[in-house]
Structure formats: C-alpha cells, structure tokens
Amino acid sequence: MRYLTAGESHGPQLTAILEGVPAGLELTAEMINEDLARRQKGHGRGRRMQIEKDTVQILSGVRHGRTLGGPIALVVENKDWTHWTNIMGAEPISKEDAAEVKRVISRPRPGHADLNGAIKYGHRDMRNVLERSSARETTVRVAAGAVAKQILSQLGIEIVGHVIEIGGIVSSPLRDASISELKRVTEESSVRCYDAQVEEKMKSAIDEAKKNGDSIGGVVEVRAEGVPVGLGSYVHYDRKLDAKIAAAVMSINAFKGVEFGIGFEAARRNGSEVHDEILFSEERGYYRRTNNLGGFEGGMTTGMPIVVRGVMKPIPTLYKPLQSVDIETKEIFQASIERSDSCAVPAAAVVAESAVAWELANAIVEQYGVDTMELISSNVSSAAERSKDF
Ligand SMILES: Cc1cc2nc3c(=O)[nH]c(=O)nc-3n(C[C@H](O)[C@H](O)[C@H](O)COP(=O)(O)O)c2cc1C
Ligand SMILES: C=C(O[C@@H]1CC(C(=O)O)=C[C@@H](OP(=O)(O)O)[C@H]1O)C(=O)O
Image 1: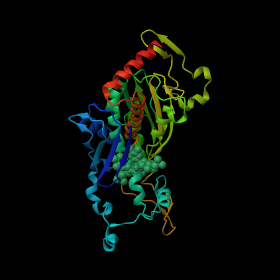
Image 2 (image 1 turned 135 degrees about the vertical axis):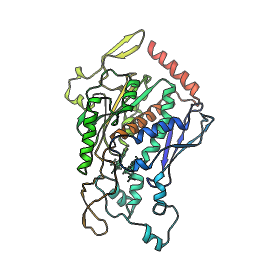
Image 3 (image 1 turned 180 degrees about the vertical axis):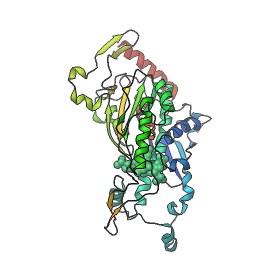
Image 4 (image 1 turned 45 degrees about the vertical axis):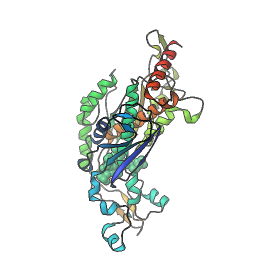
C-alpha cells in the first residue's frame, strides 16, 4: 500500500490518495472522523483548532461502507480557507491586487523549514514554503492511518499512541495495562497521558511555557499488540520493519528521535540485562520473558508488543521571539507571531499512532498480500498457527 498527500495549511483542503488497500474492508467516514477529532484535542493547542472541525469526505474507492480495492480519495476541508482565499488562491493575480493581498514573508522563523525551503526552491516569499511544511498536513496522515487501523482491527491487532513526557515531566513506568485500558484512560486525559498523577503537572508546565511566550516538547509512545511474528525481514536493509517504522515516526513534523523498547537505555546495560529470553508454552507458542527490545529482532516482529517512542522538539514558533535575518534587507529582526500551538505533543501521539498503524498494515498486506481482506485474515490466521507449532 502507499499514499500521497496534497494540500496547503490555509488552502481549500487536504487530500490523501491511498492505493493498494485491500477490498472488502469495512470503512465509513465516521470511523476516520473519530481519529481526526482525537488529533485536534489536547491542552496547549492554539486558536486554529477552534476554527477547524476536521471531518473527512470519502470520494472514491468505497461503496456502501466497504472498500472496493481501487484508490481511496480522502478530503478534509480547511475551514480557515475562507479567510485566505485571496492570499492562497491558485489563479494568477494582477499586480495591483498583488500589492494588496500578497504580504510577502521574507523573515524566516528559526526551527521551521522557511529558510532552507526558500533557498532550495528559490522562493523569495516564504509563505510558499510554510504552507506545505506546516503540520496541518498531519490531518490526512491521520485519515490514512485510520484506514490502516481498520485493517489491523479486523486482524485483532490493537494499537494506541499516548504521551509519556511533556516538558521534562515524566509519567511513572507503565503498569501491565492492556491496550484497551490504555486507550480508555488516555482518551479522557487532557494531555493523552495514562498517569493521572502527572497530568496536572504537565498542564501547568504547558500553561507556564505559554505564559512565558515559550513552548515545550515531549515524548510519545505507540504500543501495538497482537502483531504476527515475522513481519518485515532481516534479508535486506530496506525490508527491516523497525527501520520503516522509525522513518515514519521521524517524518512527523518536529520529531527528532525514535527508540524501540528500552531504546537508548540499552547503551547503559549489560547484554544479559537487555536481551529477552525465549520461552515456550502450548497455549502461547514462543514468547519472550521480557520485552526490552520492543517487539523487534532482526528487523522482524517477535510477536511481543511493539513499543516505539518518538521525541518531539518544542514548537518552533514562539511568542518570545528568537533572532533571525530578513532575506530582503539582511537586517536582524525578532520574529513576532499571531498564533501558534504552545504544545502539540498530545496531538502528535495520535499522528504517531497513525504512522505506525500504516507501516504495520502495509507490512501485513505486503506479506500476506492478496486483494481481499477475507483472504488476508485467513492467511494471517494460518501463519499464526504455523508459528505457534513451529
Ligand atoms: C500536531 C502538530 C502541530 C504543530 N503545530 C505547530 C504550531 O502551531 N506552530 C509551530 O511553529 N510548529 C508547529 N508544529 C511543528 C512544526 O510543524 C515543525 O517543527 C516544522 O514544520 C519544522 O519541521 P521539523 O521540526 O520537523 O524540522 C506542529 C507539529 C505537529 C506534529
Ligand atoms: C493547523 C494545524 O496545525 C498548525 C501547524 C502549524 C505548523 O507550523 O506546523 C502552525 C499552526 O497553524 P496556523 O499558523 O494556521 O495557526 C498550527 O495550527 C493542525 O494541526 O491542524
């Protein structure tokens, strides 16, 4: 499976075209809208989220609630577009109108794609960069992820993204919570964190940063359970599924690093304290005593829960401006802004969940790849039986 997205932050709409989704998958706009609404929530979001009410239109590839096997076109409208029709319209504008509607952005914001993008594409107006580099695009990535999650759910695979750290405030280590419990608890949390003890502290940290004109980042974690053994492969670098998942998480705006299981902590432990011992029971087949490696060995799934974390840097647009240089005058200036999120880590947890869901679903469709959900289900079940008795 693959997908493309198109659309600018303040243009008319965002579009995703998904190709290779098997036929016979139950899919409704309502299923996708649930995740779109989850992405919009979270303490620390800015005024834009009060304007947008993200809902999807399914424009092709689905009939009477089931996928057909053809490309699926998904569209989410930008409500804010009505305020930007002159500035963001596709048609050429006259010189006179240009003076009125086209306030050229010549001042790059540190931490954004503005300057590098302008140099790369030769744009003297950095709106031409920021419109597409904006994380508004993650809306349709979540829509694509919601389709992937339907595939996973039909195969009994559960997945959830949640927040484990914001602005240096860390939630306590996770108890033996099931994914459904994690989902239920984090859904009710204003920061998408299961640890109610630290929720208030995280909110205060966000409020404090905002009050100071600053922003904060954090760490999100995605867990997936019920994943079959042997997705991905060790035989070639570009077939390693952990690498694909890492790239998908890293591709989320503002993400700066990814780890699996105990991750960077592995550097500080002996091998005997890292590697997960192999056990066998009639009931479970092969399993691991621990899951320090987060569900991967040799670029393949072990059948243990997948545990992947990503770190999000603080939002770069700050009310407390950072120094930059105007590309027209070469003068130093202090960037000033009208609106921004002060923390988007809770929203990013939903984006990360979607990114991982897509990679997992894609790996399954590739590996058990036939054109219908029915056959994929039966192939996955017989592969599970085979690996249990192996
Ligand atoms: C859900 C989400 C919301 C974001 N909101 C903002 C925002 O309001 N203001 C901002 O400056 N950056 C925001 N960002 C981060 C920028 O999009 C990102 O830092 C920028 O595009 C540069 O990309 P890079 O950080 O990956 O290098 C957001 C990111 C995500 C994932
Ligand atoms: C619109 C979304 O996030 C936007 C991501 C973003 C950025 O620079 O990445 C900047 C802000 O946009 P604006 O400048 O219009 O306020 C955020 O609101 C969204 O998440 O749906």
